[in-house]
Length: 320
Image (cartoon, rainbow, N blue to C red):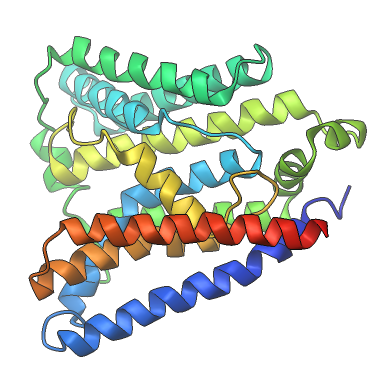
């Protein structure tokens, strides 16, 4: 079992290199076009701050997609968890209990997805589309359709806290992403994730508890969405019930752009990190240059289609 998943991981490495060169090219291009605005420490810090919370969602999505699954519910789970955190803090006055509530809520939604997919044998697309509607609807029921404000202590504390000049939220997201990148690349959990995406039946015959592992993977995605909800509440100061409607699509796009195969069995968290930053850099650069923001959607869409085409081309070449 020690070799499961190593070949798919290597196959995804080449695409990560190419997409990394694309990101580097964008950074150089915008630095040349706007030398006084883009490559400043202030602007680069804004870039990483804007990407941090989406990175948590995309990292969880990476594990799910590598198993040949999908999770459309992460945006709704983020919002629901933020609402729970706000209510818990309001009732107890404890940000720690609020964080615990958000994490528990996210984990519960993720485990529900995993149980329905792995044990109920319901397609992940249908399950997570359903829980997306349930979580968003539940958030609206809990708030009456009105955004809740974060307690001042949370927004002025965790939301504005810095270490070495970098927002603490960025450090938290970066540390968790790094740990999960290592887990995917070097642990049995990661090898089993690749094996299930490559061939679930072969993985089962090889001794992998496929159903149990899928529940864990979806639980991880939900847990990260719950944490993202708490961090989003701290950073922006409101629950943002209507502000995260496209988070799931942004996370999926980042994962696919970063080289993870929609067919499962190949991908890396490092590629996902690059995939998260490409849209963020494009948006930031276009704003600085005064380019209409609609062009960002056009370019990101084109990059997404190109990434999927490259994935299919790589699969055809491997099968020949």
